Length: 101
Length: 425
Ligand SMILES: Cc1cc2nc3c(=O)[nH]c(=O)nc-3n(C[C@H](O)[C@H](O)[C@H](O)COP(=O)(O)OP(=O)(O)OC[C@H]3O[C@@H](n4cnc5c(N)ncnc54)[C@H](O)[C@@H]3O)c2cc1C
Image (tube, rainbow over all chains, first blue to last red; front, side):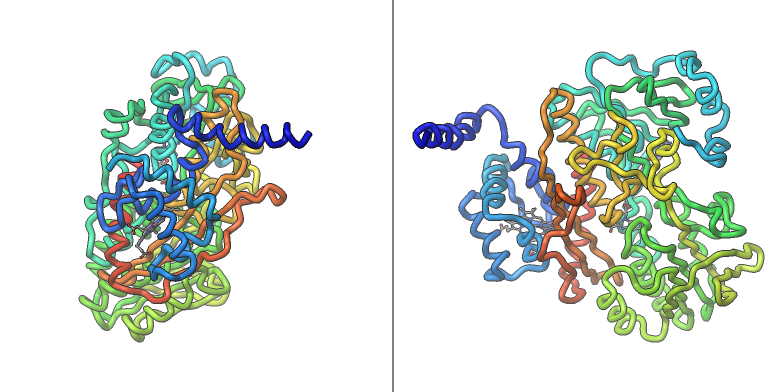
């Protein structure tokens, strides 16, 4: 039983990696799409707001966490960031990192 | 299909013909022959145009999209109050639909949808019909003129503009302010919530005051609000009025306009009659009339209830509703319409492939308000689907600006460019 359970979890963890190249993670894509009014479609802002496309994932996640904790001051991102979980930061970070500028 | 008498009259000959003899729907020609899976979208505003672009983009152009819009060009309501203040012209807010056609292959049909047959899955225009597999209704709002005695569409076009759809009426209202004598009064009336753009009327009061302060400093702005209090960004607006326009803006709560005297330039509330040199009555609103033609208006005879996973109507399958027409505890904004459009687009693509859509949609909304030519403030929230309540609920952490600022004034301008690009480019 335990072994089967572990196997299922292992396959579950691998699945996103297997699929990563074939298809974008739709949950990540849809979450990221809600940022486009300010940061542009797929993070390609035309000005004023930072470009998120091709931002390093680690940098992205760190910024989101800093906005959330208040460590990085902001006009609006402190409010936006609080609406998401850390896992969602990872998802969005992966999506934006894969977008070309 | 539940049509009230007014809607039937508005429908005109085409609608009555379809209503009475459904077979006649096919007496007209097919405007663009349907091949393969097709989504028809009624209304090319913030919601409809975004849905068109995103369905094409996210389906790798596999799903055919026909967008039906009555106007030849897109005119943005967001920032249209600054046309009254004078820092923008209506041309600055006007965009073309060309990129949606050329870059994304959206098929654009210019015209008025006059009837919808949800049984035959057909949309009717004067020049013919369009068949669909799924329909998105995104008509924005229409006005409940019947709630204000003396007011009708013609009056708003000629003498008492609501200017709550950006365009000719915005320009007319600006001209009336230019013609107003110094020492005059501009009255702005606000309907009971829910209405399109909660902070919009208070932003408008700022923009009108901005123009008057610089050109006719003895004049006044009188706000007649049907609501018991300022409905959005209250602290920030009252502060801006006090600091930037001292003594110029008078606010009256619980002042619902019920009657207008067009020739005498006066309005009546329950308590008083008010005369003004320029009258800007923002009438109560409901889902765009075309939603009732499709029979999807089912809340208070005004709004459309939807499933927030897919924005499918609670009345008819395969008919989705997005934007201002939706019944929800969500602000009716352009940003919100784009957010809903993307969730709807993603869900439709999945449903057309027999897959389940995302069960936990999460969306954002922000509205910047310009209180002068340079300063702005915002309200921002994330909304997450709550399965138990079957509703979109504001996540913790949202809120308004700490204070109005020039930094946010700059950002508001950039927001307009970026959001219009996201909708149309
Ligand atoms: C003064 C003002 C300021 C605002 N400021 C902001 C802001 O700063 N930020 C913000 O996010 N929102 C703002 N808004 C709100 C925003 O404009 C609306 O919430 C938004 O337009 C709603 O999008 P929609 O797609 O539902 O409707 P719309 O954008 O109105 O689009 C509906 C479209 O459908 C078309 N249509 C309707 N019926 C038919 C038919 N039968 N046949 C063919 N076509 C049809 C219409 O012509 C229209 O183009 C403001 C609104 C106003 C009035």
